[in-house]
Image 1 (cartoon, rainbow, N blue to C red):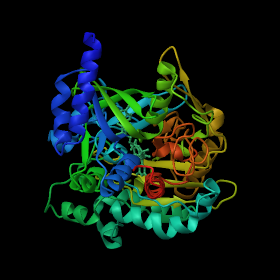
Image 2 (cartoon, rainbow, N blue to C red; image 1 turned 180 degrees about the vertical axis):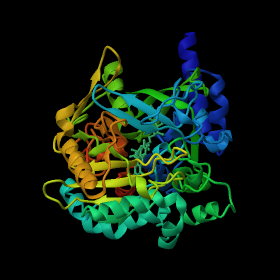
Image 3 (cartoon, rainbow, N blue to C red; image 1 turned 180 degrees about the horizontal axis):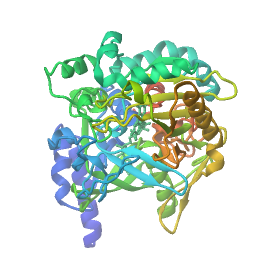
Length: 526
Ligand code: FAE
């Protein structure tokens, strides 16, 4: 036996022994001193966002041992506080030298594995969350159930009744969705921007709506009374919330950890995947430190693999693996991709005579404008906060529109990175809606388009909600199993065909619940 074969065989023997021992996970941690060795695991999940967290919980509850690999940091374990908007620090960007908020990036940074990342493409910039909890660490917590009519249009093959009677209520409960108390909203100075935004919208003839959230509003009331440390009232949100927000590490992932069946390995980035002869998978993984330096190379070998790396992460892994080792892909991968109709805009000189939108603003949005049923200009918009520490009399809006023209994601072999086939023609209807909205608001209330924000007030290239590319029932079977594979499941935003008409995480979570319930009952994981 030559040296290479000996090492490989010994590693296999050792991993087989560990596999059957109760302290298998501890052993897997310790063994990392031997770079390049193979760690066996029955089920591996890549990514700890909504899809990954649901998969982990339901598999652990079913008694399966699961390893979850996450490229970002476990912030709770690290004990490093999140930064706020006014003082960006360690958590504010993924290995960048400057802050990467949608605007006002005047802050220099020391590169650190922060919570927020931005992926830049030719006509679109996509923000994503990194860390244990994925996008739930950085998002605004808006927990919106899609309109049933639109859900049926987007997913004609799903049983809408079951979703609205069972999966959506289930995920709202698991995610701890709640609604702000109207009296608190009416009186709290931190919600002046919402009150002004809603009054102006109604004045312009638009319908307003209350938006539920996973931020604990009872906690916020106590923040306001100075009984507990402040978070939403201390400009914390897109770089993480130290308190108040029920991100996934406090809901699904915590429950999964409590079963004793889950091990989360943070700062573990999967580079590519190989299909093995036995139809299982080997993952090439790099462990890094918080400066992004590679500290170990590892291989994980599993029988069952769940890809939940988020829309762009999952597409990158599939396409990169294909480029490296001819990993089998079906022809639907990359197709039916969209930005969920995201379009940012803003207005200046909002109510200057009545004192603007407020110098103090909560970071958690609770108001929306619902123009979805307007045949000519269908959109929903969030009345977004702009907590700048002073009153800038500016209103910010994130519109969510229909996606009339879908895009496509492909792989550039030279740069080894994704390419998004997307340009101004894909956002034409969204721009039209934004112009219509701003015109109507200004006519009724005064104000101007916010020319200093985005591109002359129109942010067509800002995307918080990339969806699609691995669409349910197209690239996968009806429960997320990737076509052409026996043991690979995709469970994240890439299952939704580019649009869902509202902020997407409630839908991503509900679809993951639906898929996992069916996959488990079909004995896919036994
Ligand atoms: P996601 O949450 O993105 O999780 C994927 C995870 O996989 C991440 O933690 C990655 O670090 C990890 N990962 C990726 N690649 C690898 C790899 N190669 N190896 C290991 N790990 C990897 O996926 N949605 C709402 O519904 N309401 C909101 O209020 C809202 N606000 C938002 C605000 C911001 C600033 C942003 C960026 C997004 C917002 N979203 C909101 C979108 C929402 O967070 C997003 O749709 C979900 O997080 C997507 O969930 P996934 O499970 O697809």
